[in-house]
Length: 72
Image 1: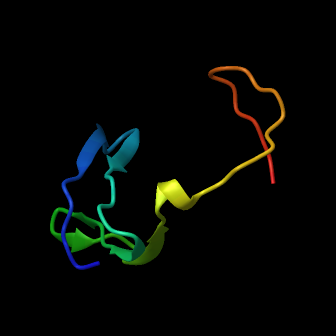
Image 2: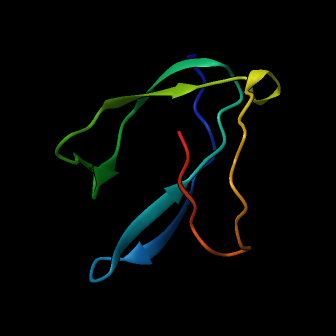
């Protein structure tokens, strides 16, 4: 994929930043991060986006809303 995506960035220099985005295309994406116009160490990195309609997960043990659960 070659399109740039809108990104929501929250946080600050003291607590750290979080960037959120939703890929629009299935495939391997190159993620580049800059701060004040300078590349952040470790970027770019590659991330895979999958078609959610094709992903099957299960069975998952009983869980509680708001609590992490683990499965393989």
